Image (tube, rainbow, N blue to C red; front, side, top):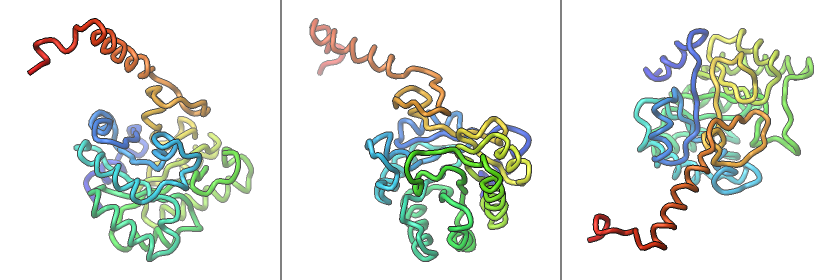
Length: 258
């Protein structure tokens, strides 16, 4: 177990864990200043490529963006999502996880699911690959409109069992996405490893948001997203000043010319 992962585990019940996404070096450099975990999420499919599903994100997409992110990450733990269809079997999971780690130098990979993919997760961990789990809403396999989870007793029981199963397998943390607050609280209480919430209440050990969402660069009306700043406003100010100075022949001045 790496020192960085030990630091994440040690925050359980002590300090809130900050997890933020990054898809490029420039964003990663800024995210790394604040994040305990920098996640190269397959959310890049909708954020950068306007895909209507993360199922369209390829292994090549993830590796290319992760290589860029790696150049900007210095202190945080770097985790990369394994995209849809890359861990259908034990052998494909190991082959693709090794490829991701070898080419991107990331610290861990994240897989979506519980009991259905526990064999693959066990296989990865047995082969010394660090894994982050993901339960609740699973964008890679969700059908139809996204719905929150853990509202019925059946869902609640299944989520708790899956969480305990993942913990036994050796994952170092679990993302809980869009899980009812009381259920997320119970899961977090039962587990010895940290939970990272997204739309799953303040009761989780940490929180993750898509960076583009929280800075207002990506326009979305998802319930759990809070826009902490309107970055588009500052982009527009810069572009407007550039346009004005070019038209007035103020730019480029002698200082900015050869």
